Length: 493
Image (cartoon, rainbow, N blue to C red; front, side):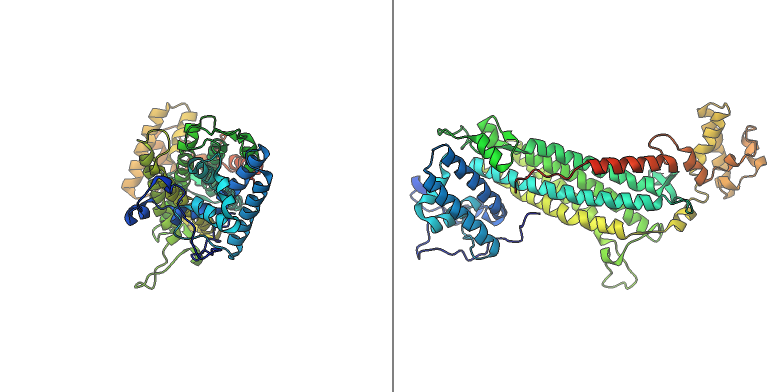
């Protein structure tokens, strides 16, 4: 996990009484920038998160400059020593950046100049802030994708364990509840089957993160402002030092591409959509009308006025924050949609939605994981809700089909049977043999004609179905694939 809690302090130390200039671009300007313009232009308040990545990228860049003979080895040694001192000092709180810095790049360079003098200015040889910030952001996102992948893996593990428990044992029957379509009772399913559906959603989410990482893990540094650099740099050496798979082949694309952020925000949106769907079910199941689940006190809150209340706040926030991350994605898509090549200041708007999505998932996924881990499923209530709910109607239609009736006709026969039961305020399981025969002479009184929930799930033995045997195979497959999906670890930290 990256250590963003070690944020820069507000009191930056300087070696002399005269504060060095924080601007990296002031040479051609005579007047001072307007205060509001400076405030609008400033990104340090949020991109200060990138300080570790900025230092790492600068160390790799300086190393390459020395190896290629672009800078003297002595200068490189002094620069790297200074950068390492900054990393250590910021990490332990003995150094801090100036909060008036325009961005994290100028903050690092200014502090480096304070420590080592004018040699610090040589660090920016053969690079621009355009390729520098793109590199920093890729490094940052790469590390946090790994963290989020780990959180999803932990959640998957919880789902596997809960599914295993709900599957029962030799002395305990599997937990059955009604599956829903249109929020109406549809067909009986195993609770294990239901929980595993979310396992597979998160499996795809983790696969998407891997796919996004493959495109993310290319180096932009060395592209300069947009046209490349006129020094004999070795971009692939920098890629090697920073753990990138290669370099971006087009310098204009390298500095103007933010697809890697959109890739992540798209993946994050789908992740939180899955979390929101689960949260919605927990909210419904936790209601007094359902009583399928009781949520632990640790993930619920009370009411300031109604003493009896126990509110599913974690689940509700999971549902609500989906809109937040969707907004991050749509907002940044809107920023990017009209930008001509190459870099534009609009692209400074990439970091806040990215950081927001990362922060939201980093808190939400483990909170929802705890909600599922500590939930108590009311299996008796689930069983009670299956009574007279007509969720086995399809089984009776299929029974007639096996006895030679075309499915459409069988569907109609059972539909009339359901209508009869509704009028009589009884369930399909309450019908006598004579009553069943009044709808079709093919009913013979066998036990399968009662269409119990237990019998219904046993019949769903097709691959991917909800029978205990099929779910056991699915659970074994899930565990095998889960074990085979190794943690995402590509960052060179």
